[in-house]
Image 1: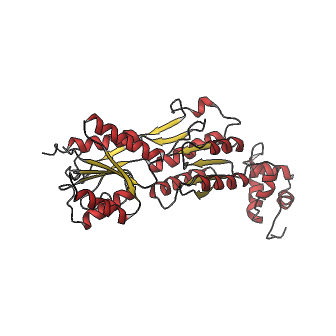
Image 2: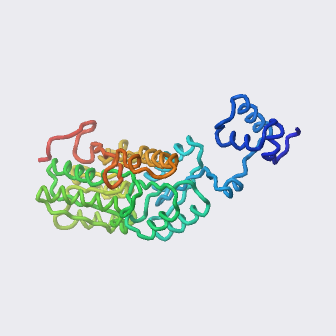
Length: 357
């Protein structure tokens, strides 16, 4: 048979001397097809360059082999790395990952969600804009597809999630600064992000460490860009009782603060120490190198995707399998790690230095 640009299922069946149902079984994985027939049909598929009609498969109620992913932004290195890991896992299962961004806006998130559901994605990975969103939970329940959240859990739902130990990591970072003798430690965050689950947990961890040390906590979530970071630092450093240490709860903010301190010729850590939440590419190479709380970003994306594919292999949700390795709320926790460098007052390549005098 002459190769055509648009070979059909019937063309493949006729060339391979089998029925169309056999060709369909080969496309779906080859169950109940003999090895000889399987190889013959696959050879014809390659010869004719046959492409299955996904639209027809969808109309028949079959899988679309697609996974939807909703993240706040792919410009954020954290979510970009998570998305790439989820994509590799999806690809290894023969699925296409469709990525959309919510900009941490619940309305945009719901729009993206509805469009993905309309396109009949087989499952959904989601870093929710808000951990408490009744409308989101209702739509996900109606969609009747497997869903896994990551970075942030979805409260008041049975949706499993993969989350870092934000509270523990922030508390450990703050206690490390306190161990150096710093007493006036300011916690800085981005404007409009203090309501996010991750940031609330990090602020809570900072407050807990300060209160346990009988030190007054100071939280400022007014920064929205580099210029505002520089203005805030000027106000603090040239004001009454200037801070001797700063804890930044997001990697982009850590970069803003580090650059602003250098511009203002403020010596780190001699004049003010700095610890950030989330590692980033240049944190270990700048001078001084920056102490950070590290999250397992790649592992988070991979684990969330693998958990989703576990659900896809089940005919219905099995609570015993869903919560394996998770706590009673269905959360699987990923430990954070304090990467000690120089900006906190420690010597290079040293885990801890003696407390600051």
